[in-house]
Image 1 (spheres, one colour):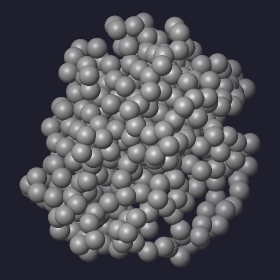
Image 2 (cartoon, one colour):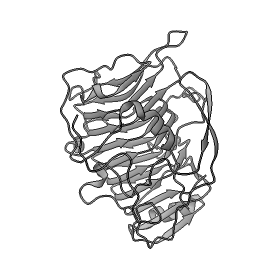
Image 3 (spheres, helix red, strand yellow):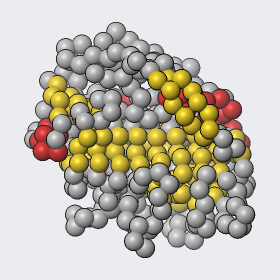
Image 4 (cartoon, one colour):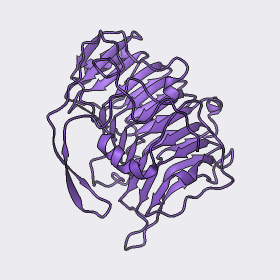
Length: 384
């Protein structure tokens, strides 16, 4: 595989003292944390303890790799003032009041039951330990938005206002960078089905209705039936020629479907780590394609539990075709570059595609992905 030589997954820090991509006039600053111990579960089900030094796992990027960096790039609220918000009303006012550039820092736990509509030219940063609980962010007909270091969880699908994801992009929204976020549907270990309703929680990220120039990086998707939807179906003709997405260094843990699910779109997926340890009898999937989508999957690592003692259904790491795919099955490029552990074979219909994204990138080898992603994905940036 030939890749560019410009950008890489280990981006370099510049002279910006905030490390957030904003200009040096921002009032924010970055410091390293004090560190501490954390535990994680190995593939064999054992628990290991690691020491967190408090330093970011990789230099803090000033800008995204991929589509969000093209056509003028994505700068969010750069050049605008900084405001710290600690309540739902404060966040809603800051995000929704105007299209002027603004840097919004989220402090503490903000609880709510409705999505907040984020307007153009905004950067929303989560301070360490902050959380949006039940509060999703919705971007509709806007552009130039950065969402970083945010923890969002338990966003209920329908509270009378239509679909509600943790993060929703719709209706021509373009130039969005989602980075180092931690997105979760329900608390760890709880059933995916709530009160008999498998749709109780919607997706963690949806990108539909003609959005474009989006990058999702270093983000953790956990404990959700549906992780990420890119293209809502064959009727969305506004997607044709748009819906360009880059995803890198993301961690999908115990998401049964949509890592991501792509239709009528072009997506570049590299160095992601997908791991499934829970089985529900449902045939799940990792990267799924439909309606003539084109997806390049470079150097990813898929670890899906095959079956349990009851013989429950497997989870497919890559699948291209569904009977409902009006435009035909999706087309995958570079599937052989990925590592598949404890999985069935990818279900790929048709010949391989030759999609190459129009930017430089340098993925790390697939065997190095789990360690790199576990060290850095999620809301790990020491923003102050």
